[in-house]
Image 1 (spheres, rainbow, N blue to C red):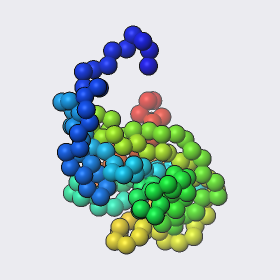
Image 2 (cartoon, rainbow, N blue to C red; image 1 turned 60 degrees about the vertical axis):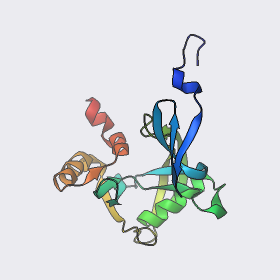
Image 3 (cartoon, one colour; image 1 turned 180 degrees about the vertical axis):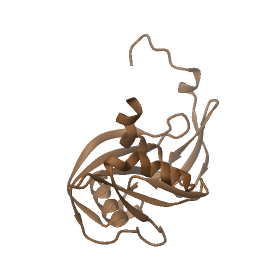
Image 4 (cartoon, rainbow, N blue to C red; image 1 turned 90 degrees about the horizontal axis):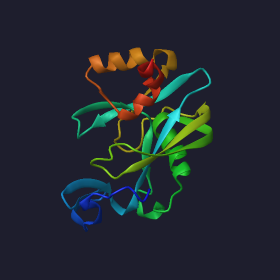
Length: 184
């Protein structure tokens, strides 16, 4: 940050925990209320495109939205007490296979991103999965009820339009698949 940048008054206000659950914490700093992940939990998101230029997507019911949501495969890093120091790349590889039934030959770290910085402090690390091998059906663990979609990149715009027409929610991270089309 440059010396000419002035911090807002709330930047130095004390951080108060308003409520804490197993996975999230609501906080207040000055006049700002926001949500963070509990216990330092992080997220990993996976961009998986196979050798035939098909992107691997998932959908699952999301309680906050009240409907199913089309998303890139993703999962929490260090969400169990016995894996609090889990490496994000290891978690990404595990989540990709659990959710989609694809194993990556190589994972590439594309960096850390923040999905909604005005209200959530959570970040995610984006990984690109290379050299995909189908190992199973996917679907997640326990009662996740994840549906796997293999969509040609050339048809992603139409697929998203079709899902929207069917009432699905769209995760903001899908914008990376539409970026060039949106920019013209």
